[in-house]
Length: 500
Image 1 (cartoon, one colour):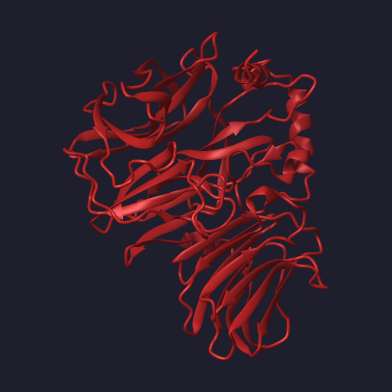
Image 2 (cartoon, rainbow, N blue to C red; image 1 turned 120 degrees about the horizontal axis):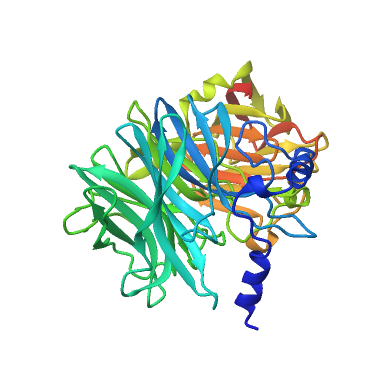
């Protein structure tokens, strides 16, 4: 029996279409085990049990944000293993306090029988229109994708549309065809999809519709990257300040020096606006969105005040995390505001983070040897690090008192680099992809840092979001110190710290 058939038979055994059909005791046991994990996040979205991955359907509708995420709640069940997949539904008025609405869409029709894959939402009149990829496999374990949809009323009732918009894939492409992101322009609707060409290279294609029901293939977006990985997942096109931005998650990139170090990447092209008639997109080079270890499958939405807001999976496909011992995995990054500055996509925590801040403390220190500047399991540290009188500064995040366990962020003025090292961060994870990430950083004197620390994650925003590092770490409970030390000199550290 071919390996793919064996794997699929294992994955989809004991399929359950709706979670309500599962013995409540099984669900309760899974959620109880997950709740006992010492690594539960405090202010990041995580699943009650099972696997969370891609954010989906991220939309502002009916005076609040709606955010769904890919969800396999019984992924770690045994004796028997139970397979169930869908979208989990969250809402928020402010992007930081989230209301849990439970299962949103489940894999319970012939069009999505083996997976409610990624998709997006668009507010249309008094309904939220949702479009996503339904994944199915036939008896010979050949994939058949359907692009399908649903509508949600202002009361939160979701009803699927029982006819597929697109069946199978267009000519010239494989069945790896998924993840629609929809938008409206000049009274027309457009959807961008990730796809794989027959020659096993990745691309993005556009479909067009006048009524959201009948979709016609417009064609492939013309970029400068025709052989860039074997698949482009989770494409997202939008515009900021009269510039076009295309975000993709390409799979199959080869490592280039310090770039493309993770198993899969997420990044963007920035250029002139996409020509929706010719699909020509004149753009700059590919930019990775995150320089850390754990960032993938982003999706954006437009806030009512015009800001472009990003969510993403704080994890990467095919990797394993220590939380799996507690029958859950995955989290979402803290929501980020996007802007463009000097041709770069800038990311910063949404300004609503101020709603979470308390116990403010000022930091104003001259530091030579290692000195504690902050303590706390969940905190935000916003500091300016003066490098004028030192060539190197080490910042030990989530460190124990003896500074033997820590995550180290190094600012190296001599090498013009910033280095993140999680070798000693706690429980070892995914060492096959390396424990160190480096990026060039033009350091003259001052480096600005905004650092979000949660129970098992760190997000680092450098120089007002010019560079971002996201990582999962799994420290013990005593690792709640932040040390700073200057090598061969003195550094002045000025800023604020808040508990979150």
